Length: 316
Image (cartoon, rainbow, N blue to C red; front, side):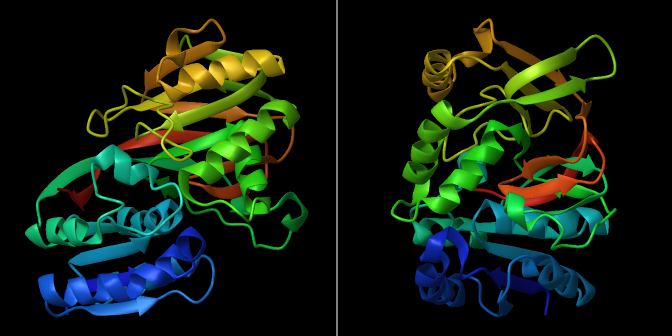
């Protein structure tokens, strides 16, 4: 069987479980025969994707949020197989990569119809090289084993403010979707203390000092729809870095207002560069997020680079 579907019922604070029967009925109608499996624990998407590839799958469909999509994409990209298409169906909280690719995240019927049509687009992915482990909460450091395999990402890798926002969002139980991230971001505008880091593209772009955030993006939006890299192109073989200097709460609010409209790149606090490779350094282990999943590096150095044309993705 060359079609394999991976469901994450825990995605989107239960949205995955609610959408599972809807998607299954639509897939039965539009896709025909396929194998499928549901995750039962965090991080299981990667193992299921590896099993699908080992079984000869030519189409692997990930049903969940950005984290689910990212983990499945990581395994497909790592396999080196050029004969595999990746299908993406949204059931998450932020659905940021869906926005960048134009995949419907609020109309399952339209999304599955586009999947069945099978139009593909070959896109870049990002790759993070570091010794790392999952670290969903600061107090959870040490609970996961260290890994040395590269971690690929679809949308972005982020340092600083966005990690604090993800931590805060886990504590806001009464919100969902983009509202969850916006509320957490507004809270952290006043509470977050900034992060001292050094970043370089290996040539003339160097950042050194306390920063509100640093994102290195393949897609255009993050955090539930905020256009942090409004000019990013997933087919140019490059990544877009955006470093924002720390500021007062009032200054942060001004920058946030500009970023919501995608107009922040011209602000004096913002350094922006488009390059193939970036290196980020910090004095000691560094927590960062890859497509919304928080990781920790063992050392203070993380290398991020673009992998051109690494994935064939089904798009509308």
